[in-house]
Image (cartoon, rainbow, N blue to C red; front, side):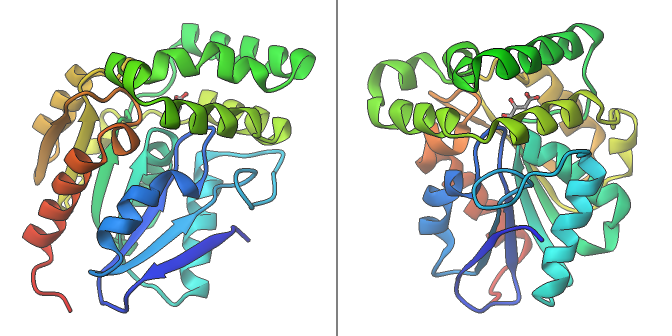
Length: 260
Ligand code: MLT
């Protein structure tokens, strides 16, 4: 069973947040603050991250079904799913496998594409380095490329918080998730099947995913809109929480008005 936190206020609208690699549910703190008076918020730790136990043979499909099992235990039938990067990969699978459980999606700094052969071999190299040198390599190799120039120069608090998260990750969990991401299915063609309201949020300086892919998704998904977040890289919700929250709240109020 996955570790989760149920926060916010009783409401028929429920927002479920799925975190990026190698972070955990705590990355959504700025969004909890913005939403907690308005709706129910569920933060989930994916297998091996935060307080959830690691699992050896992990896949995006398994993560998606574990998320659904968690919602079953809470008797939540339908939710708005918000996922950033790896959290987004899980949401593509979740919507493909359990479409009736999704009332809307917020896909942040993510991609429906599977890994290129080059990216796969980078992941397997990283796995070998984690095994020989420990998770410090994640902070050294990944972190500098993830944030915007603005964040790197001006937000030492966030940089240090991210560094600590990267350094404290369970190596077994990191390896399992890297393998699961390398093996994930391609959803590039499949996204034309999405028929729930969808918000795409992308940091303008995200180098992991890119704005061209975001525009492609926006043109293919029927009921979608795209918001670009200024001064943000891959972690748009943490680097510019005001911009991110205003896009998120605007989307929820537009599609699920006067809920309480
Ligand atoms: C993430 O932020 O979840 C990762 O960067 C995703 C990835 O490595 O593909």
